Length: 443
Image 1 (tube, one colour):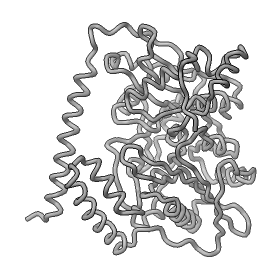
Image 2 (cartoon, helix red, strand yellow):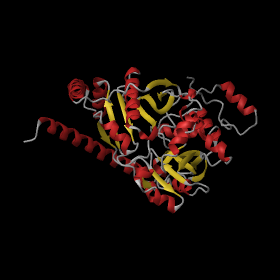
Image 3 (cartoon, rainbow, N blue to C red):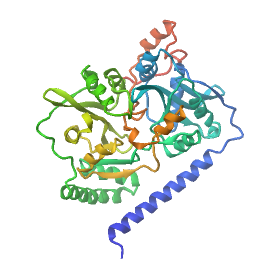
Image 4 (cartoon, rainbow, N blue to C red):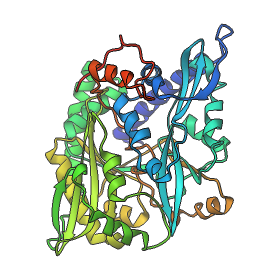
């Protein structure tokens, strides 16, 4: 006879699957081409498309971006500055003068052994329902780019993953990338967010939140669900991303020499650029681990609040330890856990990273949740490189890669005066052709 807990779990899962099936049916019906839909034309995106793209994203519930962030991604991108080549910022589908589809294209540098690879990360793939059938032309334009070594899709939902596979991409082979490890720091807010997601109604939600939070609190204590304390021989400090100094180059150079694995560029310039998001609604902090004043490891922790359920979540966006030393990793995990608690986060998450680092993480008995499908896909232009990357040991995949933590919800700080000044300058501004009646939100 099944336990009460099993019966409750089965009932909840049945309800979730029922809603997913209903939602999927509605989405499939709405995505059928309309006879009244105007024909759409594919073209490269322009900076002046920002507001139209933002409106399209908003219609489909994608995170808000800022016009300053477009400037950062495609004007101040270290990968563009080093290559001296300006690739497309993306592509749009345009129908009757309106943007009905978009796919962003972010240039990046990756390293594999002694080779520096030119990479591009897809971002913000969104198409209005009547144009879903022709939306594949956006993906086709992305994969047809010349002069690219590696094509990445690092935050793909299940449907986008299937499109990536259709264009001969493969899911990242690093073990358990689709499994998130997490610690609950504040049981009641976490339980309340869970009940809200299940949409059980006010009364059931309140009762369920209380029961679940008590159960989680007890389980956390009994199973000691937290990272092990940091060894005393390491010194821990915390800085802002903008304060990353050139000594980070030393640990980065040493990391590249440890073995041939695929890394996103972690030079000091790239790190500062990656986490310096204009108008960022969340925050990022760099936890530094030193031994005898030498930097031997660091972790970057991002903290954001989900506007839908109010859950504040901290994520280990990046973690580098000399030789993947377990003692250094333990020190960084303990410090990240302490930082997340102090910042008021309800949950601390860790996704990706090689097996050696995940094993250290598992010592703290984290909970686990699994994505419906792998969110990370790759395609190498060179078949030999693509085959080499089919080995999971060749990867150091984590949220630092691609657009997973590169773009976050942000506020715009562009004033009307700045818009007028940019337009009057006559340059190919990010604000060119933007109607002057469009308002901006000031942080």
